[in-house]
Image 1 (cartoon, rainbow, N blue to C red):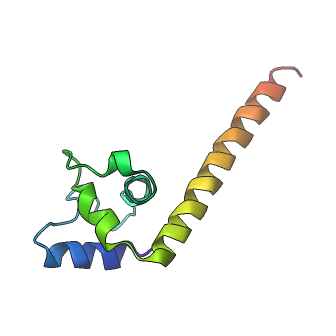
Image 2 (cartoon, rainbow, N blue to C red; image 1 turned 90 degrees about the horizontal axis):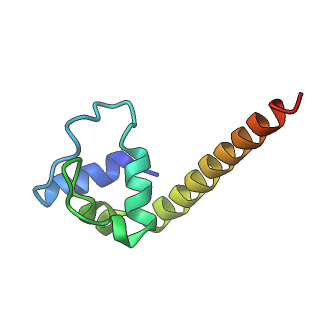
Length: 88
């Protein structure tokens, strides 16, 4: 997903990207939730998620879905490994 593209489009609307994310990509997970789930498209103290979904392109949504699925799969795998590790 193109965080830079979304941030540039948000700046054109007068909304600035999160000040706490300085190029390390920490806002990527928040952007994924804003793009995929409508209940997270609110203005909160971290950033204004309404504009993230507005400026996301279709390819950004596909990449966000792939990111979400891979992170969820990784968490499930780690839980399974931790569970089976306790049996040995």
